[in-house]
Length: 179
Length: 404
View 1: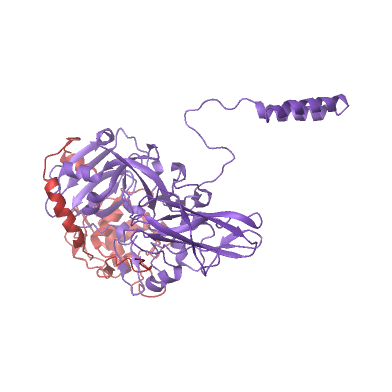
View 2 (view 1 turned 135 degrees about the horizontal axis):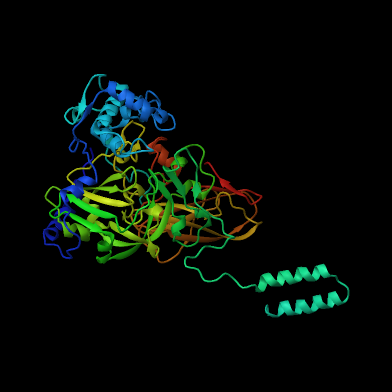
């Protein structure tokens, strides 16, 4: 994972200023309910994952009625991107970037489906339905067994095949520097 | 002078009619005169452009028109500002219809004092106005392939430049305070997909704006009404629109739109993460693809240059496919991270010519060729294409894309 250690001196320099009391006093403190109402935020280590659970067997049903129309019955893709397959293709001339071949973190998958899917009616799936769909997509990719239960405890432990497939931005990498 | 013309023409026509010129001619002239002198439209509350002007964003209709992009017609542009109505679009789940009276921004997470703010409260804070270009990380993505874009709009048009007005985010971060260990913010939109991007906190201190104004009026719905981030010089997706929350965190959240998307896959199979900055880029907007030169002679070559790293220092233009380059004139003032308009007079000899521009920014970075980019990044990185764009002027004056 890329580090941004170069940024921290800036933060430290600003820390003194930030410790002060508010200068303008606008707004007010939100209630816990107001923050909750905005919805769940899930970190890559699984922090924020809610209660609920599901398996690939349960997920297959949800997937076929809510996801397959665009993503294909087995996540092979259609009007929407492929979700399965592609492992071992990233360094070939025709890489196929899917959940199984490309996504680095499993909790991120729960987050995205919960937040943004299905495309035409985001936010409509229950937490357990999302776990089930996640389990099914992981199963389609050979990452999880059919009966493996996905929940807030188990999902963060799933090791995605491309977990170490990302590097920090080295740019400028192309383009002459004219002094 | 002009004022006298109708009356002298009328006298002539009257003479003609007297000489038996006919009723039809007389009616014809009366109508022409009417259109010259008819009262114009009355006052109006919100202006429209001339009905003769048809330039628009390049909307591609797909099965999911709520998720996609439409480009700014750069080839029709003057100066450096993009009209708000022509600012490029990139939406992930459509344009929400937000009542500003009901909209709130929540700042929470690793802060000393979480805040909930109305738009009205945000507007009470000390504000600034800055002219910045915003460019989609996927702009010119089609240029990686063998078939380059046929015109400036469809190949380089996911970049637009506006004056943005709002509150420095650093000011609000000082209001909330941050806890030790805070290093990132997660920004979230109020669109259907709740678009989320992680941004290093240091950038927030540096120059991020919480913008509510665009080109002198409230930001357009397509651009994030009533509140969006402006993250100067960084890829467009970080400028989260319809902003509803900022969560201060100790780590990036690795959301789908910063890992599975907006990361750059290299030939070795590794993908670059958090490729934020948009590097120096330029494009000739006249003559450019789809336009036509009306015979040999004098023309003004013009175009736009910009860099996420600051000011544009130099733009060179070639008319012979890169064999020789001349410095173009840069329109002052040259603003940091904004469009810079360049111009160069050119006498076209009527023969086939290949035109291109090459920008250098204040960091000394020189815009590379497409080939140089591909040599390092291969053909599948998708995002952040900033290569030199070639246009071919054919002998008949028509202009097309040119593949080197």
